[in-house]
Each structure stands twice: as structure tokens, then as C-alpha cells.
Image (cartoon, rainbow, N blue to C red; front, side):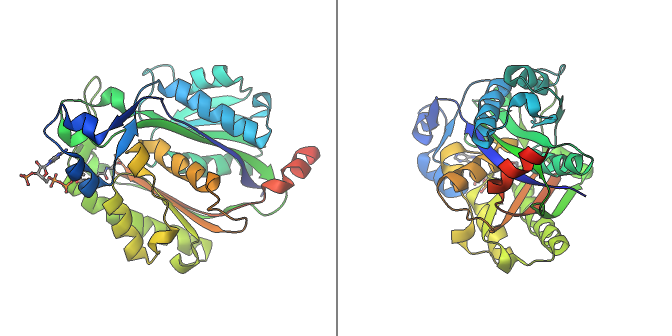
Length: 319
Ligand code: UT7
């Protein structure tokens, strides 16, 4: 079966930055509480899910040197679509000029990893190029007078281009899971605002990340000690610390971007991945663990062997 590799990546965040002090000025909260309890210092707010997705997607395509007209499928992970119908992927498809199919995928904060695994499945069915986007505007479904949610969320998008390769594929192992009996812990009814039982989600989140990561690593035939870079969902710096400690992954191997972006749901892992690549933290051949969790509850992990984009030209010439 053909494998796939990430050959391009890109991100987009709205210009407007909201700091903890901005929030403290209008809510009964403080920079100290938010920083200590969550690790968040600021977040970007604004834009639309479709436009952020288009901006991140275009950057990923440019970086890969792939024409949107040559993309077979666009998968847009989002839990904050522009509308109920049509899918926001339709707007992103048109905005980018993607020639192939396009669909939305909602697995809450696990959405990007779900989409990445689904995209690999499509490659194994013969697709050559897939654009995977995670884009969110959680600010639109947040009650900005509710301090328990307002301090947590941010908006943004990240995208990767996945190309079929004749060489070994990058995906070594994966794990997808869900437990709908916990869906009351994190929800947003139609037309309503986000609600979360933070303490309960926290407890389940650490276990979900540890168990799901362990399952994906086992499927890949590797251990946590082999992980060179851990890219977890950015919901709370304390969750990242607790999960990585239990997995035995040292802090210097974890990517933490929550301080700058807050919780951006399905955009958080691709934003963190882009940050790691752009700051030179990912060397070719490195073993990368992605792990997300969120409303549903859902969880998803993927183990990748990073690199191989240099054979992209050769792969494209053959296709
Ligand atoms: O991405 C999807 C998944 N989401 C998550 O994984 C989030 C998981 N949960 C969490 O990250 C944490 O539970 C929170 C950051 C949401 C909350 O932190 P916590 O340490 O669990 O705080 P808490 O809810 O137990 O509240 C502790 C205290 C309470 O006051 P009292 O009862 O001790 O007097 C809260 O009223 O902190 C108070 N509090 C705040 N104080 C200042 C709650 N929110 C705030 C706030 N500013 N924004």
C-alpha cells in the first residue's frame, strides 16, 4: 500500500491579540491565575474559520510547491464551522481552487489527528495529494463574560500537505478513540456557548493522552523513549506536563505553544507542529508523537517518522 509524507505546512492566526491583562480588565480574573493554572499568556482572536483555513492551506501548498488544482481531497477539521450547511470545507475549497473532493470532519480538539489518519487512509486508496487543515474560531462560541471559558480559547488554523510516496510512509502507528458517555463534560448546544466541566475533562484528558499515545506507540513498534518530539493538543500546560511525565517524555521534547495561542481546538496541533518545524526542532528521521483529546470525548494519536520531503520532486515526477 502506498504511504504518505507531509511535504508542506502552514499556519494562520488573526492579527488581534488579547492578553491576560486585557481580560483581567473586564473579568474577575488575573494574569497570575491564568498563567499559573493554564500556561496561557495571550491568544489571537478574530477572523472566520474558512478564511483562516484558506490562509493556512495556501501557505502549506506554497511550501510544498503543490498546485491546489492537483489536490485530490481537502479534509477540514473544525468544530466551529462558518455555518451548519454547507461544510466550511466548501468555502476553503473554492478559496484555494482545490480541484478534488472536500469535507468537514468534527472530532473536536482531536480533529486534526483524526483528519491526518483519515488522509493516510485515502492515500492508501490511491489519492496522491491531500490537504489537511485544522481551523477554528472558538471565540465565536464563547461567552466573553464567562471567565471560566473566556480565558482559555483562541482562534487560528494550521495545515499540512500530504503526498503519496513510493518510499516508506511516515505514519508508523495511530490510535483513534471516543467515549460518548462523557459528551456532557464539554459541549456547545446549537446557537449556545461553550460549556466545560474543566476538572473532569482535565482528569480524563491526562489518561486519554497517556493511553492513546501508548497504544499508537505500541502499534508503531516503538516506545516513548524513542520519541524525539511530542506535539500534544494545547488545552492546558499542566495537562501537557502531567501526560508527558507519565509517558516518560522529557519536557525539552514537548512542544508548548499554548502561551501564545491559547486553546485553538483542532488547530492547536498543526499550529504547534508548524512552530516546531519553523524553529528547527524537527530533524529528518525524528520520531514524532501527535496526541489530541477533546469534546465527545474523543482522543487521537499518531506516530510519524519525520522527513522525506526532499524526495517530493521525484515522487511528483513519477505521478
Ligand atoms: O481542549 C478541550 C479540553 N479542555 C481541557 O482539557 C481543559 C481541562 N481543564 C482545565 O484546563 C482546568 O480545569 C481549568 C483551567 C479549566 C480550570 O482550572 P482548575 O485548576 O481546574 O480550576 P477550578 O475550576 O478548580 O477553579 C479553581 C478556582 C475556583 O475558585 P474557588 O472555588 O477555589 O474559590 C474558581 O472559581 O479558580 C476559580 N476560577 C478562576 N479564577 C480566576 C475559575 N476560573 C477562573 C478564572 N480566573 N478565569
